[in-house]
Image (tube, rainbow, N blue to C red; front, side, top):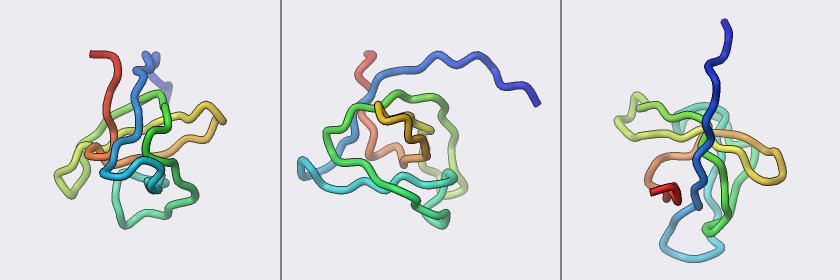
Length: 81
C-alpha cells in the first residue's frame, strides 16, 4: 500500500507540568507498547491523526531526533493555527 503525501504540522507536547514524561506508543492505544517518551514542551511534527478505539484523537508524530510514534491527543498542542 502506497503512503499518501505527508504535510507535517508543527506541535508541542502538552501537559500540566513542564518536563513531565509523555509516553510515545507503537500504536494509537494505551494498550500498545511504549518504546520511548517525550517531555512536555518538546516540539514535534504531526504526521498523521486517527481516532482510536478509546474515542481519543491520536497523533503520529516525529521528533527532531527522528524518533516517531503515537501520542494521545490531549498531550498534543498544534502550533500551526
